[in-house]
Length: 372
Image (cartoon, rainbow, N blue to C red):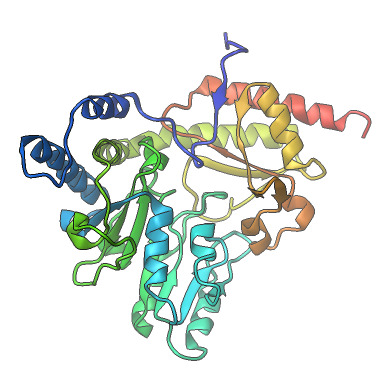
């Protein structure tokens, strides 16, 4: 029997719960003194943790360890890359994370289809207009819809016009196999906390032979490419998260089955509901569903009162609720954008969690329909 007091967490795309093995590793490191830049024994031990993590992250995306630069997360990585192309022509997709969209005001926007996939014909036309772009930035997987983007096709277009290609892969790591060389990208960014690692740690991975952009200066760490004392415990935690994410790819069949069964149940309760991206390739853990006529904030509050945590498909800025820019880019009407919820599953999600969510969602749905 499901404990009605036990909260259910279905917001993995915002931040996955810290895996117990990672917490244990980090706790052990926190009890050890030492700066990874120091040459004494304590420093060398810290350095060992950092380099082991570098190898693990490299293996996750199919590169050499020297290509991995640790930082504070994908937001920093995205800023690092885009700032390196100031004053040059840059194209970014309309569905990017704000850490890409808001970095270069002059960047041009690549439209997407109604299914949330990059419009390759529109991208081709953009490339042919004016001078060739210096950089193209397209995320691997969208955080709201879970739609997988055609990165290899985009890479071919970028290569043909001499542009570099950057991809934010935070929502792809551990959900689909990643090989940076096969993808054809020049820059790839990751965040540990999307994989069950700690918050505040990430990595920028750069293609071999390409200069690594410098963003934070003032120290010799990361081969002079990113200054600042290493967060040894956090980096070690990211390394273990990367290894566990790679090894756990097969678990996504189980997660996908849970997600698909959930979607069938929700549409059975509310046939008028709309799930986004179903006609495109999606990762197996994400559902973006709109319930027309019911504001997402009302839905989230009702679910939260029943002990179920999900996310809005929208951004909240300074206490102001804003319709999802992703869904708007897909052509959804504003009232639909305002009624969308994102449910995201992960390694700890169980069938009981899904049953609990469906029950709470049905209760919320029936309540909103009373008197309507």
